[in-house]
Image (cartoon, rainbow, N blue to C red; front, side):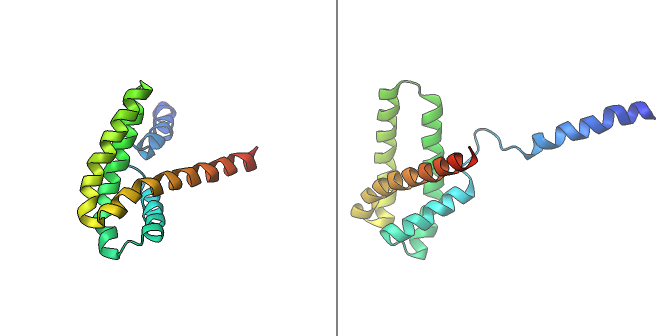
Length: 128
């Protein structure tokens, strides 16, 4: 009986954290997407309908961006893939937002990423 507990309890302890981890190829975290949508709503004045239509496109855009960053090691090729991705998604955004706001989306995305980096950098400074 002791032998069962000796093997069973460590098994349960080590298996539980593995179930809690997200797969490496998963989509972006919903909190990040929601924060970006809030930021975007404020910056380019999205209506609730536009926001709902943009959500799946933004999730796909973030996933594709992450895939490019992870898989392509050559900096020039990575930049070329990002540019092609932006052109492709701008075509998808234009029917929802119009041409001017669809183009502005990418400027606001860079600003959002910069602000996120600053927040994360501030957290690291406070911990140290």
